[in-house]
Length: 326
Length: 283
Image (cartoon, rainbow over all chains, first blue to last red; front, top):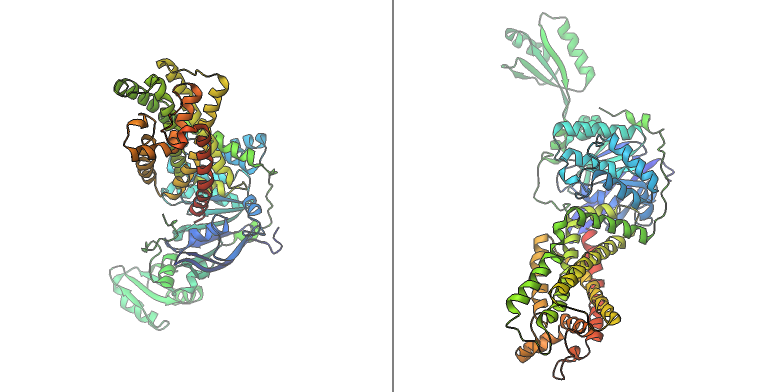
């Protein structure tokens, strides 16, 4: 058991594939019961990092601990402590959903009677009861992902690794899966999820690590990351177009730069945060100018990513070295 | 936004079931059962040990049978051990394709993320492949009985021949593991196996006697491990007389060589196969 309350610790993980450096010194720790989002584009090294932490790939240097167990010295204890849901849903297509869960349960060393009951419970919990005795080949993408997750949970692992759990899912299935993951966290499971979707990290993760070209380039909560990059902005929408010049003039007395969008009747000015906004709200409250809207626009994680890396998160750089050199 | 759930969730403790230590036998058997389910769900995967060898028996026995002369024996009886050996050689295909598919689809990764021995995946694959091939042996024996093939020399010799056949199958499994791990796609597996194993099973005494081949080809054919096995089965089952004094050494001691070749192939290929599997799966 980990004494410091950390469920996952990566300690300077490095992985070389031949001359390619896929992961170059990644360190972080995840407190028990929290969710860490590993955010980065394709080829950033996310999958390789997860493969090292789940004992599938040996680190070239560095190590990791899962539930207090070292991946190099106690791989079996690590495997007993975690579940893994891979990028491609790794369920057996020719077995039924129920058979998949039972097989993995048996391999974990659970008793047959426990596995039988656990399979029923998991199928129920993941809305697969009706499909439980159907062959997985005929499942939809969303059903496969849910089954994949159900299989990973049969031994109730305290730590769960999810490698791009919602890639390829339609928006509805994605939201459903998020709900399931939130439930797991409520029950006390620690999650590490990799994602290319900023929204997903924003929705689920307590802390986010941004990784690009094998190194950590930023770390923090979604809010901290947004604050770190670029400034927030105040956006005013003026009711009557003829008030626009006056409003601009008033605003200029309080802020350095104002951007005017006449068509949208909008004024945008950089702001440090809520305090700036309340100040400006007060200015307009005592004037003749009517406002349709006044808001603080924080940069989205997309903006953050662009700011940090110089390219967008969904970009697909040529090097996809983490995708198992096949 | 879920930024504040950290503190709320940390106090919760998971209730976990007891995970018992499992043995290699339990693990391998669980994987065998899974592979056998695959056969049941996909009976067409058995055509390689059912329809295909029957087709070969019929084709060779009735199409070529009239033109191939075998000294002192009936061609149909003579042919059957050849086709059995060929089918057993093809079991390397079965292993290679099954393993390659499992690696490709991430099933092997799933298994490797579990607290089980990494050998259990290979052992499970090997055992289910031997079962797969054994189905073929039964089908071919029955087909043989239908067209006039018999075991003439008693139960013990008869069983010894089957034993040598299974031993050969064991050696072929390692080739399958090597190819299945080293190749990057099913197409590559198929291509490689079809251009190697397939001709190797013909470049032997499988379908035609070696006596009529040009001398250098005859030497190659008679040193082919497949030939020792086929000759051994023919002699043990009483389907053909012992090889003449002008035959190459392996054919004059076929049982010994059949066993020796299989052990040698397994001993040489197994370490390479395990290495290829570990390298491929630990990327």
